[in-house]
Image (cartoon, rainbow over all chains, first blue to last red; front, top):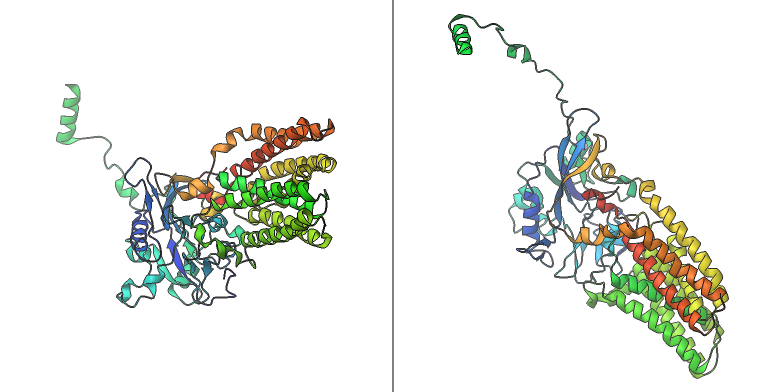
Length: 248
Length: 292
């Protein structure tokens, strides 16, 4: 049923640290690797080795440059996947009931057996989190690795989304954002975690941690006095050598 | 948005078809027998043909029957339900008119209302999307409804109504364009709100997430159309409104002028609908630095 659940107390989601992300795209690759061979249809590629390769990905890393009014521009790598919105517009537009939000943990999923591939949910999503697989003709999106996080066949440390597990910089965190005492909720509180496009009222569960303030580059280091030239006029043997070579 | 031919064909043809059915249901013209058959045949061909062409847009049409189930939340599902209901009810009315020489007025009125509601649901599929500010505006339903009702009037020979109606259509269309041009800015989504980085400064794209294209860019970041948008707007208004109104004013009636009026109007609506898609800016383009 594509009506949203009344309320889910558990809100599983990701917290992404824009300060720490180095833009290596490892999360993109591990996401594709896990999800192409697990939940639902594979994530196909078209013309993979040709001139115009394209394909289905559930997670992509954009890179932006932000120019403050003063000081140097900052490069910020920006991973983007489904935000598992509380008020998910992609769910309610679905005509077949294929798109749904789970009451028990808030994960937004697509039941591919009911999907007609109309693409309306992808239109309704502001974040570009849904892609229609061109081979299977069904909508693909981040499942929050629902087949890992509860999977008792995996060692406990692997029971988190593939992107989180693989991130070498520790820029991705997974947890229950509905529990205000959870590690992720604490992190969001401490670092001022934010919503993307809050003006659209989707109430995303995933939060982004803004980059920490950078130094402006104008401050003088405390070691600067030690770097001042100690002698302006050369004297002694080196001074003589310098003057002699200058004359040649 | 990508102006997919199947969706443009669907919305234009089924809009006209349901507009015709609405007039026929209200008993205008109150035809029976063979001439009723011809009117109903054309109306059904347009409405059903349009709906069928929409299925070409689906990636996985084998589940299409399931799309009648979510009418509580989904405008697309509501459209499916209303379309089938309208076609069934009008089918009963058509049988009466064609074979029994009778007009079941009550059935006709119900069928006509369902036909108009169907067009409204179509418009709301687009009108509901907050992600496409140009569509998410009060002008979207009036545009679809007026095109359908007055296009239907022309097709069913209500030419006086059509003449006045097309002027209304023209005004709504121009209002939709002019207000639509400002909608994206009015809604206030920007690269700064999309990334949440506006507190630091001005955001621009440094590197896209992929070197090639993808579904999102093809489907929702269509940009080519806008180069000739102004010319196409003029062409659309001329064909959709000005020429048909002139033809009717010059006394079109079962002659070449009537044929010109109908063909010109339909081609004009196609141009208008193509622009409706091609000019619509989806907010996801912000993540690719492709807006504003």
